[in-house]
Image 1 (cartoon, one colour):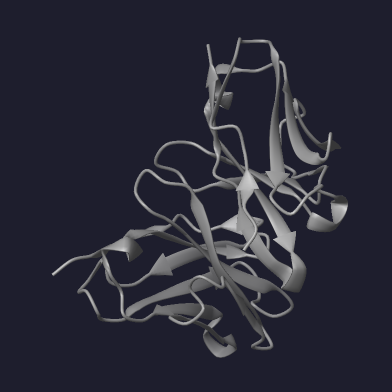
Image 2 (cartoon, chains in turn green, blue):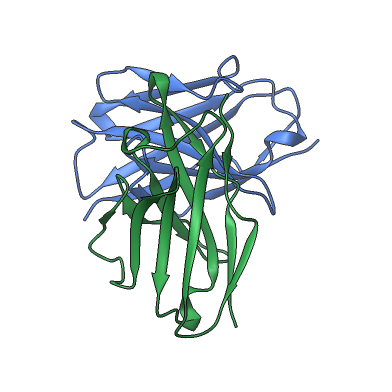
Length: 110
Length: 114
């Protein structure tokens, strides 16, 4: 089974920009992996931020954007706010339509 | 706006079967895929599997031998069964809409302990 890798932790200053990445043990991440990004705050269920690489949900703040970057899926946060401090997970779809979550990135806004 | 609510026992004995139900409100279970995801305490998310309203399923290979997901269209519900549970199955279990989990339930904690 594929392994999906994310940075364990990242720190961004308030108002700053940070990029979280999502890589695959099988090679380059493409749009065919239909990358999804989720935000989870302590004690809460995850919520979807980005679907199919770059599509925002109706509730996704404009400061979040998704893309493919350097062979990985990427989530960029531009103009970080204190309320963006959370755990972020990516999800990739593989052959046979089986899904694999990344290990998550703990984002600190400090 | 569709909402999902998990329900089931919060405590299951080792070697027994864990059974959870997800009730879908504010929308029909028809036409979508429906997923289960779990999160062990302090750990990341683990995809368990999903079902189409037609009954077609897809499971995590690491759990496939112990997991069954089913759907009851008459009740607008879908369910999860995990057999032969151990302490490693202790987790918050989430149900979600779509194979990629676009809408989530609030989750329910299940502890495996004697």
